[in-house]
Length: 274
Image (tube, rainbow, N blue to C red; front, top):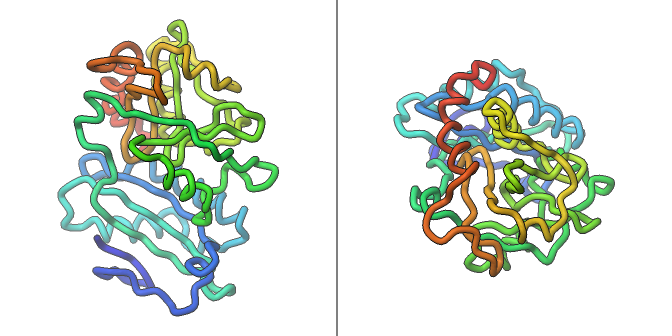
């Protein structure tokens, strides 16, 4: 791991004794990744970081090019693809601190793409956006820790929102397939506007697949033909089982496979993501 802190790259983080970001969770973050050494969707992640900073009342001191320059410096000499975590904390309450972590790629092993993952439904509800904005990526998410603590053997746990509609996972967005239509919870379901979620919607449309962004009833998860998850570090992850319901026995098929097979080529050929 490499960590950028206090204006320079270090082998490990050097944190001020008093940093409200670490003491009280007053911080924001973005997780990026590389493909063949290139940073995926850097502009989109930066704009979302700035949005979170504004929502939290934090100062994002660096413009896009300055931040990318720091990250590129940290990537020098690294050959494998990596996960990049950018975090801004409130520091001493007056001056914000910037941390950039470069670590091994936080993606599932290849078997999970081949055979799928098992997911469950959390007993905790997603915090409604009228309490905490859903488009805020904050470090202070105790409810995520509570959900992960109880997920057991499940790879991911899915939240319902305060009205009982399907929302999102602790680290991913969710898609399902019903009668050949790709369905995903709409932004008014109290979800984060995932960047890979947006890519998959665009990809599906380019392939002539009908897409619906809407409120999703929980029973649809148990009647649909396919489910998959999306997140930046992992791309598209097929779901083999939700709770006690098995969606496929051996390997995924249908739209999950079609989108997975076209995902990498699509993003690599879309200049807006580089």
